[in-house]
Image 1 (cartoon, rainbow, N blue to C red):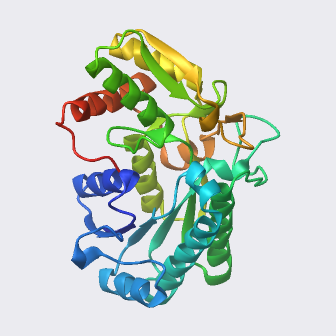
Image 2 (image 1 turned 90 degrees about the vertical axis):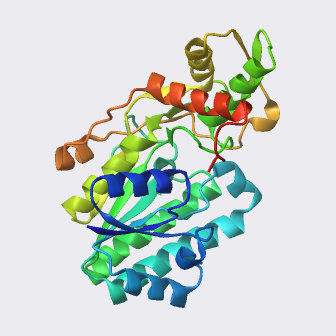
Length: 310
């Protein structure tokens, strides 16, 4: 396929671009931080249309977004308007310039909020509990509208938490692994690890598995809603203990009140049964390996050998 990826220089975007290229796809990356020839501000409708028309894609993966829950509380307007506007510009550009392309619009498991039952399925109501989740729910519904009203093949991929090497330390696993790596480098014993709420549970799927799901959904090419998730959750307390076990060091878990988020959903756990039935997808990388990759990356960074995080 000829694949167009928005947000292609971000964490998941880089992994998706690499996965698509390894599968033989011709990949075009769009991002505000990309080299000049691929630098596009998706808030500019005309620029987005030109980029889609020039790329002439068979598949469009829309990953570009302000994707951090904590930042969304500090910048709600920018998150709400930015994530919805850029999604509309991408969908409108596809409608005009590449109407036959499959569009994988990446949503989030956060859109469900506190579910009535677990694991949550795609039929559950959307009850977002933070500005980021509201923005993704709105963009998700917009994708459904473009499928219904304009006949676009929009796949809404509701990705639950995922991680791996090189992720920014504003996300849980990366933040915890960074603290352990730096503590080890400093010779601390035990290594202190500060987290937010200790009992809050989230999934932790390898980013490589998540982007593989995106491509399988693009190949399938039919509009629909799909959870991309492992169905297994970890608390911050359990995750810190696992990182210490993988690293082979004693850790001291400390809850920092400043890191505890307002209105946080106690557990976000999804069912991927629909995705598995449609594509045959299943996670191939277990959590221990995800932890090891993140920890190895941060230990290299502590020694000045790792590239910058994204």
